[in-house]
Amino acid sequence: MRIIITDGIDKKGEEILRNAGHDLTIQKLSPNELIEKIGEYDAIIVRSATKVTKEVIDAGKNLKVIARGGVGLDNIDVAYAKSKGIEILNTPGASSISVAELAIAHMFAVARFLNLSNIEMRQGKWPKKEYSEGFELTGKTLGIIGLGNIGKEVAKRAIGLQMKVIAYDPFVTSTDLDVELVSKDELLTRSDIISLHLPKVKGEPPAIAKQEFEKMKKGVVIINCARGGVVSEKDLLEALNNGTVRAAGIDVFENEPPTEEQKELINHPRVSVTPHIGASTVEAQERVGLEIAQKVVDALAKYQ
Image 1 (cartoon, rainbow, N blue to C red):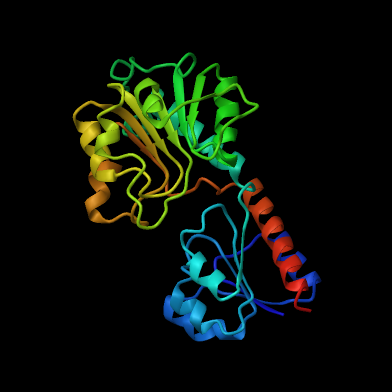
Image 2 (tube, rainbow, N blue to C red):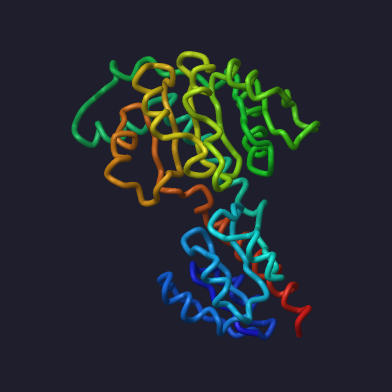
């Protein structure tokens, strides 16, 4: 069967698909080009860049499978695809470790001014005195919103750092980790650091916005390696400026790449930023490629 891969795939995943006898096209396409060509294919494999919209699905008259190499499905019109009988696949666990490690990295970055020190020392400065008031992660209370695959990996690492971990997830009622499950309001009021690990559902408001910031401890740290829009960027900037939020680590943004309007947040001296690289490790890419390829092979086998 014919498969189009628009955002790339690890070579080992490519081998799995070819060895199963499938005809692959690996090509980056514009939205209009994708609509023009998708009718030729039985399956499409994407990452986060390609949007599989209603228009794409309607044009994909032979589509049997839409596969997303990664966790979120917000770039796919899942409900419409399912209404057309198209199977939706993703890899919810493959990049969990990589994203979790980046979340912890952002915590260390803002705790010890790593983001600023790197820049200023390269400018010939020696900001030893200016950055003498860092803080330790040990002993701090980490609040995790979303205790799925990634949230659990963050919790494991935080426990290893001797942090007190609390979590809120409306779909989790028990856990075998040393994590205290609490309400969202209790998490907001108790946490020294809050790390978000939940999807952004289209049409729903941010999980963290002005009313949530008003409930937090003064000097809280916010980490968002989940999805752009899970935290209101406008309200986060206000909270940084009024002292509610001590610092933030951000890997995902409401617009990607960010627009001119987002530069104030990105350039804020108490913000550590990365360009949506949570899953961008060699290990994660290999796991994602292998897992999504095998799932596509298994799904298409039903039609052969």
